[in-house]
Image 1: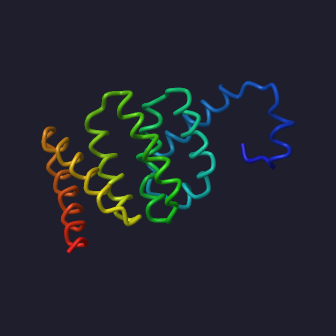
Image 2: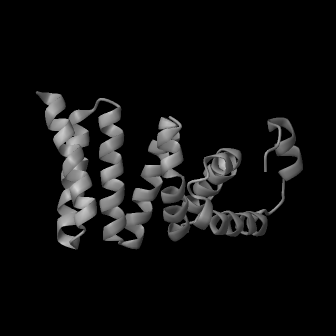
Length: 160
């Protein structure tokens, strides 16, 4: 899938790559089950992972969007890929809404709040984290609730 831009158009013109993309997606999702914290693996596959994430979102494969997004989230954060992280979170948020997955919504709202805090948007961060807290309280997600409350306290301290 990693082709020079000029060759990509020529070689891929008129070809249906759906089956090939699905095979690669299935393979990478299987690998990510055990290698989600193998940052060398994710770095090497990042172009494929982000491309498949966008393709899955466009195809409405929401479970795959959620699985890919959650798996690459730590790498994107810790490697400083802020734009890719934000785009990934927005795609996961779309997946959470499409699947009506409340737990995923709580997770992605927490992550979006954390992202906005890192970008210096304290009001937006607070709004996302408050939504995450509300969802996590309803679900009884004590660990998630504690994490979201902690991040909200960090924001409150930053405003002082």
